[in-house]
Image 1 (tube, rainbow, N blue to C red):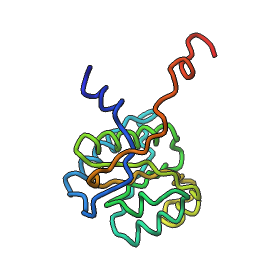
Image 2: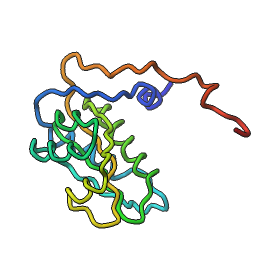
Image 3: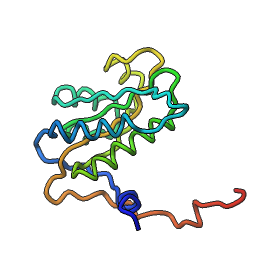
Image 4: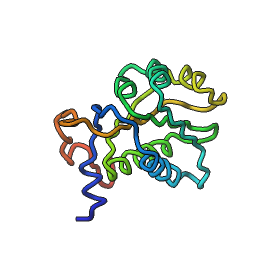
Length: 164
């Protein structure tokens, strides 16, 4: 099996981080992978806002319900779907962020900003932009483990062939 395949199967959200900033090189690699994500018609209708200061992280976290990983992160990338963009591309970018982070030893956790209109206004994104998702990042704390939710459903429950 390829390393990429194993990375995809092994990727887990990690919510516990060391109390240290991300290196500029690590953060730049993660952002470059986000930037190079494929997009519909190559429109690249996104922006990636990096928040690293504690006040900014705390303020962003107020726009979601399960956002402690943002507060605890060294940096959080807010995925801004620019007007005219589509949510599928945002998911692809988030996955690239997480896979790249994992490949260089950075832990990540996807976050939903439940009050997305308020989050949009808070960060100053334009009207029509969607600010619904972010990815919290940090070096994993000693002993950090992903939360276990029982693995995956059996393939027979989720894979359909030919028709539903």
